[in-house]
Image 1 (cartoon, rainbow over the protein chains, first blue to last red):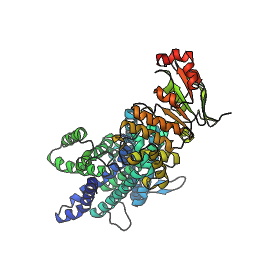
Image 2 (image 1 turned 120 degrees about the horizontal axis):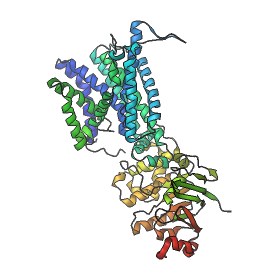
Image 3 (image 1 turned 90 degrees about the vertical axis):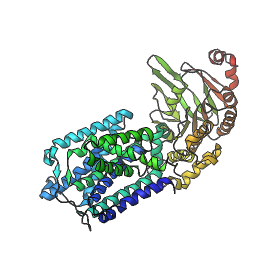
Image 4 (image 1 turned 90 degrees about the horizontal axis):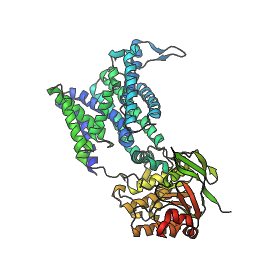
Length: 327
Length: 249
């Protein structure tokens, strides 16, 4: 067993243990905090596929997070106000049913990722960053001006959506749901990294010219990675909206795109559990330092600086060392 | 009539006022090694780029197995049977030697859209990759990280990746670049045997290797082919001696 495997296992067991700990210590709020960390980890796990494996520095991933959030918000809003989303040519009702909301969130996020990807992947480097940022801003201002769904103020959803067999309003049950989804995505990512697609994508990041020379199209591989990445971040957005029972244009903001990227870099770019390590650290810092001072971001900035300068593998790299070539 | 595997017909490419390729027609026949030589700046790299598809010629065609591939992209040409090696090794440095070879096998299989099954568990890909590694003498280095290889081993791996494609023509851009005398000799012996499998269009600066290997040589000067012929013909050609070989012959 490598040190990274042990580190990952400890992280995962720690997350599983949170509810028990919270009950024993009588600190139920910890569960909500951990739910937030898990959902942010999921969003970052999405970005990690594009950024970590595909090398796509996307500063527009808040788009997918926001789409997930608004998919939830819009569907639930119509369900709670008993209005149809669409009357013509056929009637589409809203829903409070989580699986349907997730499906819609993933589909729309994937579709938009495909369109943004096709346009953005014509460029590389700084231009790619700028184009994804520009898309992010487009969606942000669209959401701000979309008065039917709250405009700048966003929308409140009064009751958390339903999942069959669960009482999603119980923090532990909702936490379990989110953690399960994160684990599923991490298992998928672990498989993907070792799959033929993962091998090709990994090489496409390192030497695109080699991919062409063996008859594989690096841009097409990166596009698919971008779509998968967007779908996962979209799912995280839907959960995040359900956690807060609130959606607003902030979910689309470029600051949030930056925040997910910070999570990935903090945890370890391209490392399987990097997003988890990053999100847990981020939420912990936010909670503890945020309690001390309103300007806790200064400390986050310093930590980030230290990671970028001295620990390129992020927290995972610091604890578990360099990644073993996986075979 | 000899079988022509790869040929260019009147390829021209200009960058502003500079004619990097001027009406170049060369061909590569089955079973031969055709070397392209020329002084620095003669347009060898531009020619390779047009044959492999990263540059589009202003005029002329590239044909592979009698099929016009001028409009095809680089990856499409690779799938059509063009196996190339790079002057500066283009390998995934963070990956293992085996993974690099697998990439070639994966490209040849044309099935990268598998997200769940482990690539190392694919017997067909793996045996193809391992076979290519064994042939260039890297059989024992499969699990080594590419970044930890010596320069010479990277050159060998570069060739191994091209082998996994089982191409119908090789285009090799200075495979001896940076190799020592011994490495160069080893590579020469290897390429010598390879020509029966698929002909090689060889761009090379190492004249000993070129004269030892080439069935035919084309001399490129200022974007033009000034002579094509056997080693002896080229050695004897007055224009070539003047333009390029100078005192070395």
